[in-house]
Length: 487
Image (tube, rainbow, N blue to C red):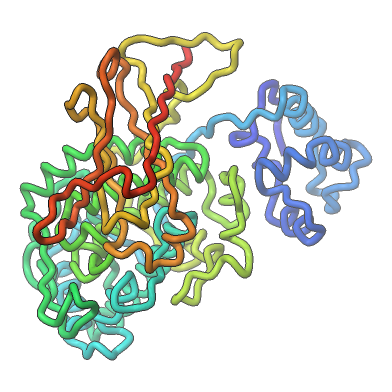
């Protein structure tokens, strides 16, 4: 119970914590959702009167009745217009899980040797073995039916289930029962052992697609080029921005600087096999790369106190249908989206970073599209503008691409979008054909300058250049918005 009345409560920092799993389950059975902002907003006054002391109808358990202070806090929230607010990040704590995934840089020589044995073991298995490297890597795109879950809410849940399935296969190799899949923090140089066998590459034992015949050898850029590309793509800044977001939609965003935007830029930075989902998972670095994105989701969940099904729902401002049957399946895996929320229940945790583990703080004055008129706001030459490239028909573009924003012919920003060379064959891609990409640039970089956009494919066809005509992908439009900063 609240110890004292809170005069200026917000949903995300205070109100959502007034409800427990038993409350949500009880009300859900009555087709009432109190686990999301919208659901509680719709039921605001009703909840107040049902929980009002001293003769409250809810909760039923006398020991869990609301105190007068909690009730007054809830009333203040309603009276002040149901503010959503900004979360106060919770401190990270070490997980107690059977499987702890470590930073690749902290592995001992023995742990690297065990990991090498596990990778070599599944790579040696026949392609038809469901626990073979070939079969598991093929689940990402070719040759399996397309299970693409990118740029949608299921992106993180699907890849969490995928990593668990792959890790189980690694642990099925004799003598590797305790192996876990470490993560490569992309903001740091990749470990040297990732460029040595069996992690340096993989040769296809059989065809997966005409473009990827038997004998195709995965390839990637050199270590030094990857480091340079990651810096040029501002991936660290994109991750930092995603990690301080309060809502699920802002955290996962590919449109602006969310975690999937960072992921997409990362794929392009590592190249060449990783630059498109077609065969990306066959490059062994894919698994360490994706373990890191799952770690970041895990860390964000812990910071937002959203590690269970109901608490996770409390961070969602949009649709929650991806968590609800029958739309929560994660084919071809048996897990559902909701079952992946609690990584500890899955038996998986992550090693805390020694540096910066407690450095995350909420961004109180981040640039936004609008501010309440009663607030002080500032505009100056360093203020950011949001330039949106709107209405791109991504199914017309063959493969991952880079959209470049130019001012008087000079590139001032770019966005990378990760997709197959044949997006029109993917059901998910077709359902989400029209996309938007946002560029954030300082006002001074575009003031009094002519703006235009170019699209370049990352994988070029022989004899053709990389530039892709705008008219061929739906004639997208440019929209500009000046972002404000609270003063």
